[in-house]
Image (cartoon, rainbow over all chains, first blue to last red; front, side, top):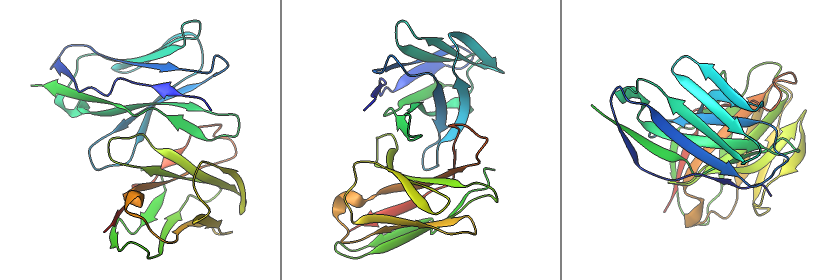
Length: 110
Length: 113
């Protein structure tokens, strides 16, 4: 079974700075990756999907994928207090189930 | 708004009891999957249904069972509840053209005492 590793944090970042979240995965054959954001007491919300090497940008969010090194990262520019949440990295398996990491808690300091 | 609704939102059960959690998906979402998320952990895949047939199962015992109905609703049943079953239970659905992208409902918080 595929494994997804994330630093549990908490990661503390000053407001307005760039938050960098990292994820490594075990299966070199993995093709696509998700980033979900989960506020405390709420369900995960999909924020990014990436399947190509390189960067994918969506507003203040940039996902970076490096298949050779088997890591995927999420950058949040101009961090806001509302970005404080747990960020889950996820990888789909061939039978469509999604393997999630344990998540990284991000705390934006006002 | 994902179009996936779950009920109940919170419930408390006693060890040994049985529980049924319900999910209603968008029309056309033929695939529904259920996940368990314990505190401080990522969601863990329980099982998946496609057009009312189970087509994938994670490492959960048989006392976790499910059903999917033609009206895009589904159920997760857990028998003989244990304390470790306390978790957030998430229903996720997707249409045939959504690829791997799944959309979660708000979840059902189950506490077993």
